[in-house]
Image (cartoon, rainbow, N blue to C red):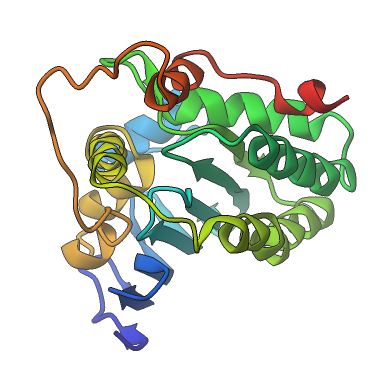
Length: 273
C-alpha cells in the first residue's frame, strides 16, 4: 500500500503510513510517522508520573514518532523493529526515546554478535555507558512475564531521555543506522530454504510477538488512549500467527536452543571479545 495520510485524531494531529504486503522477502513491512497533540488523559498522566515524569490530567502535550517493523516471509530471516520518538509536555519539558531490536526464529550466533556489536559502536559515539544501559532496558522492556521469556535477542531501547543537542544527535544517529544493522542479515538468509515445520515454528514465535504488542507495548496503549486509527496502531502486528497449545519444542533441537536464549538473554558483545 502506498503512503497514506491519516485523518486527524480526536486529540489532534496526523500521521502517514506505508505498508508492503506479500513481498518476495517481506510478508509484511510497515513504516509510520505520527505527529499528535492534545491533553493528557488521567490514565496517560498516571502512567507518565509512575515513570518519573510528573504530569497532571489535562496537561497539554505533543508527540512525534517514526517507526518501522519488517516481518520476513522466511523463518530464517529475523523480524526487525525500530523507532525514534519525542514527547513534549507543556511546550517546555521534552524527552526522547528510540531503539532497534531483532527477533529471530532460529539462532545464528554470528548474526547476534554482529547486530549487538553494530549497536555498541553506534552508542559508543555518544557515550561509552550507553550500550550496556540501552541493552539492559531492551531486555527488560521486551519481556513477556506470563511466559517468562523475552520477545527476541534484543538490541537497544531507551526512553525518557531529557532533550538536549547531545540527545538529538544520538536519536538522529540511531535512525540513520537502522538499515546498516539489519540489511546484511537479510541478505545472508533471504535465499535459504525452509521446511513446513520451520514455517510453523515461525508462526508460533509470531504469536508471542503479537502477545507483547497487545498486552505490554506502551506505544500501542498510548495510541489507543489517544483515539488513533486502530489499523495504524496495530500495523506492527505480524500478518499470520499460530497459537498452539503447549508449544514447547523438543530438547536438543534448534527450536529449543532459540527458546533457551529467549529465557536467558546473553551478553553478545562480550561473547565476541
